[in-house]
Image (cartoon, rainbow, N blue to C red; front, side, top):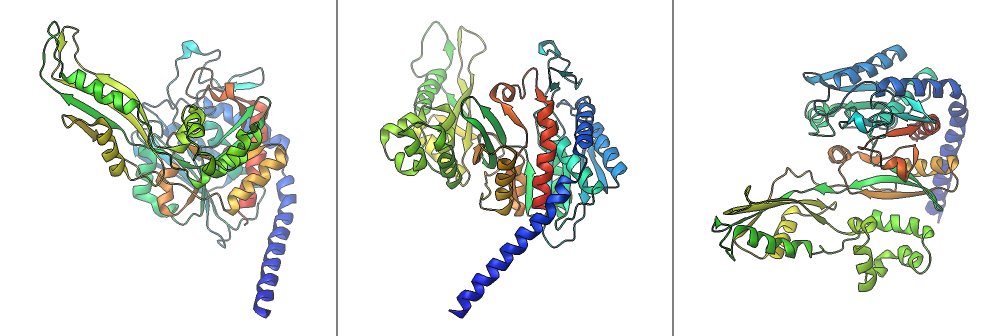
Length: 470
């Protein structure tokens, strides 16, 4: 009994000390002249958007030099690693007392290309109209990179107490080849290997009509596992049909593939996601979402979920037919025809086992099914961490009605490259956007509301300040 009471007293004291430490942080978080810092954030964001880092070719060195100047002025040690002509990564560190492991803020400096003919404002202008700042990368992800840099600057200027090192890492080529993070991890993994947490893209905070705001914290991503399906057969003149031609065999095999649904596999984080968003649904669906595992045992409910594009990808590996190639001439039956499939695998999936499943579905020994991409094994991070709880608490402080839920991203993020080092990686952004604004990512008229940018820097600073001290 005495030992049990000792444990109770120990945990009570630990909780009390942690709460007291967080209370002591509150004045440090409130102390900065936020109006001035928010004005600086807007100005620097405009400057950053004016640096054209369209990939290809990237030219991220110019963006790295922008951050280098930014950090030098604040006295923050930083290094540019130019690993190829005009391509570079930038690493900066603000040292803590070392009592806790570091936290990394990761972002990429490259953006996708923009056709200026379709934009209301020039895509590399940073121009503000109707309270919104236009620019390629305004949402993906120069906004988050600039906010992360501002957090470093404010922490340095305000002498924020830190138990963890704060690490800022800006990489190149995320949008195309991922060479920036690949090079950094091959050559300087020691600079981040000891980190406990990493924050990067992969979170989305959507303002939904009639439902409020959902903060999605990306805890996992599906991995691309691209497949080529190749059929062979006797070629000939198009005027004489061949029942067993390569295109016919290919189409028959593909028909079986597109009609196939891989089996449901419910991840714990996805189960938690459904439980959180259940409040948005009417009954009886709300009850089904609260116990999604049991609900999926009902074939009718499982079929409804499979037909819903917003939910289907969360529950299984997915297959999308994206490429079809046969003859280049209408009157020629080719002796070879192929298709390509965009397969996305859940974390923990065995790619070779999936490939075997797919071959069984095609069910034709004359049709070859092979992987054509280098698989980066999908992985995930637990939502049961102090950082996740801090994100949840700060989100509710700034938006008490918001829902915060762990999310599985259908696309790939660089988190997958850093988790194998033992780092808990989250996709998290502090900017709230409407679905209409969110749809402008990688599209024309990408933009960010200025007031959300101003609010976002203060919110991210609070998340990082609290996370850096517990």
